[in-house]
Image (cartoon, rainbow over all chains, first blue to last red; front, top):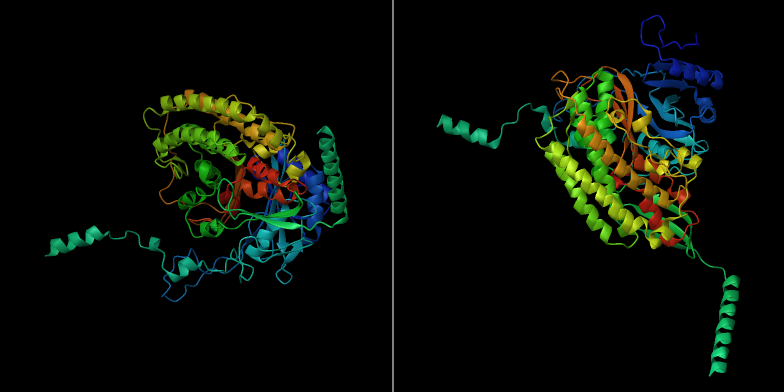
Length: 220
Length: 390
């Protein structure tokens, strides 16, 4: 019926969502080849992944298609954390962990992806847009000229992930001190509180002070 | 005598004219005004740096980040049930409402749906936290404009609502009551009757505030036509909630989005205002408290019987996937983008809080306003610092 994407499997009996299917077809047609991958989950949400060159065009096109509400912009670091859940014993040698980068919905090929969401007011249809961020350049174009609200979101993404935004007026830190080194939301940035002191949650049942006394009393 | 008076008057006028000429000839120098880092009504610490030309703001920049607690990073080392106690503290005046979208996102990924009784009680508690939150706003609004009485009314009547929340959940501010698959416990005995009484009190409170503030001439002249946000600007800054509806956008996620909640089981109105000024924003919030009391009243009548918890495994593992759920929180659209990789904890959680977007319009909005209007505009935008910084 509609040009469906590679990740939407039309052979299964999965529930169809005609509104979102036709909507994503409209978006893909309007973006004219910029969409690398797309996904529709019935009665849930839509995802597209666009090529980095077409990032600003994507914003403008979606805006003209009625997606005038800017919801958020952020990034995802797809590398598995080398620190796991932060529950390792700091005195023990570091554990071997999975290092393969595995992207989520609508695929991708880089470790970092910028993720944004825009919505159509009135119909409440939203679309999640992902874009790969090349690791050598570590920058994409800024959406400030498309949605003014992207300004602060890009500043936050810049300091937390170290992703640059070409054409952003002012990429100062929002939260961190100016001379802060590192990008806290990257997976290889350790959560220091968990590194310097073992997480008490590792111990399943912590003996209470009273329990110890009782044991001593019983022994004597 | 009268001659002397006239002469004096003439001399005065002449000197004024001379002063005016000097003022035109002199180049005025700009001044930087630093507001904070203390919010006038202490919703946390926000600093605003404003560059003034005379009484007019030519450039303003809020400096957030005094309360950044890194919740997005912390969620990555927590399990799903543990995250609710974190997100509770984002918007601390309406904490229960913060838990709901996260739990709904986790439930969506797991394919679990809470029993209808739990959905109903969730909606009631959600609306109660909205009432507690926004009633405090209505009181603070008075304080920020120099009226003292409303804040006493607000603290008094909010306490009734907090007592209800405490009675049901055990916590006044941080209930941590929502669970994946339902709620921690059922409602306590007597909750329904007590809630009905409190809703009556809250409607009286709304009438009092309307009489005290909204009909007040000083209040009107300080808010009408001040800080106007047109519809398209509000949308592209991602403003949400009452701020967006006050700009004439008829959009409420409670009505326009299908979520496993009970809002569609009640009859209520979405309040909008065409003006987009400070007055409209305050007025929309006042009316929304009234609508919320109506929602709660109606839902109390129709709580279905049954369990409050669905069958979920003891150890919660969420299957791989990504989900976005947002709800219409007291401050606006609050959403979570949850990425799961089949673990006990989330892989990445993006917290989209309402105040972050709502306050990012401030540099645009404050351009050209007069100094006293800064406070009015900030008050009417209504933000909570924990909701900006996360």
